[in-house]
Amino acid sequence: MSQHPLFATRASRMKASEIRELLKLLDQPGIISFAGGIPDPALFPAEAFSQAFQQALGPDMQAQALQYSVSEGYAPLRRWLVQHMREFGVECDMDNVLITSGSQQALDYLGKLFLSPGDTALVGWPTYLGALAAFNAYEPRFDRLNGNKGADEFRAAAEDGAVKFAYLSPDFANPTGETLTRPGREALLNLTDELDCALIEDGAYQALRYDGDPIPPILALEQARKGSIENCRTIYCGSFSKTLSPGLRMGWVVAAKPIISQMVLLKQAADLHSATINQMAVHQVAEACFDTHIPKVRDTYRARRDAMLDALQQHMPDGVAWTRPEGGMFVWVTLPSGISGSDLLAQALDTVKVAFVPGQAFFPDGSGANTIRLSFSNSDEATIREGIRRLGQVLRA
Ligand code: PMP
Image (tube, rainbow, N blue to C red; front, side, top):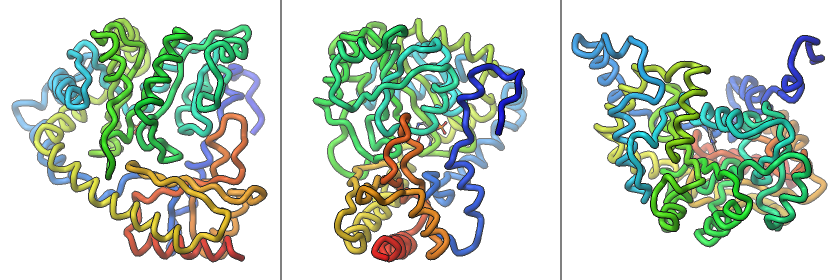
């Protein structure tokens, strides 16, 4: 689409997300979709939410629930999050916590807060598409975090702009499913210290670990080095989307107070505050059943991941490689070079009715043509096995 002459320069960098466009096509019967990366709605704690909303709309709470509220977020929810973060080894208080409308909003605010046009954002190659889209609007350049560059090379490459932050999802990343090791996290802290830039830790999938030992969040590791959270450069973004419900759009940020105060100003300018009633409901449900609900979510997704890994082993031809995630929702597949993920998608949709996301969109430089992302979260095991069998069939042909 050609750009309207009145639009700002940033608009020319905005593209419709391939994934969203694709999702529109998937409402046809018979399609097996590994595309979405969305939670299974059967796992929503719907009954608990029903009670929570009834209570919020009851005589004692309705005036508060339907009213404007503070930009920082609903205090009882922020208090709950202080406890929640403590379980992961992060010590903070309420003033270090901001409630956002999904963690996607936090990514947008952080782009707005840190990036002037021409500044550098260091990101994984590939990286979560929504983060690229959020940052891209602020006209940065992207450099590759998971190559082998050191601080001097990043600085030299940054030329006119400064390196402002490194962004990554260290646990079961979208799209690769990979987890950054503890030494990898320590090395990243060294790098960001050397560059004196911020570090954005996207914890969207952190609670969804199916096996292996948990690794502390980068924010916890930095706090262990530097004592107080006020000395930390890591900005942790959390989300209730993968654990309780994405539709309520509830996320949070934990960081040093000067960062949170600045983000509160951004929130005031953007939407004043996240929906009061949703914050109250999420607080009540988290309080009542987070700890009993999460194991159920993990058990369901673990079985689906196992089914997918098993089926890949059984049906993929030689030359195809894939990741073995310890959690999250995604397996990342590398096809033999020369085979394009987009071509494979067209063929798989047409001939065997299987959908997934071609990997190229996750690379800021448009590389990765021979990769695809498979999500195992939203199909049962039998469907996953059948879908992977069909995909193997197309690849062999
Ligand atoms: N970060 C990552 C890595 C994600 O995959 C997603 C959603 N798919 C988000 C952030 C945004 O999630 P939400 O806004 O629903 O919290």
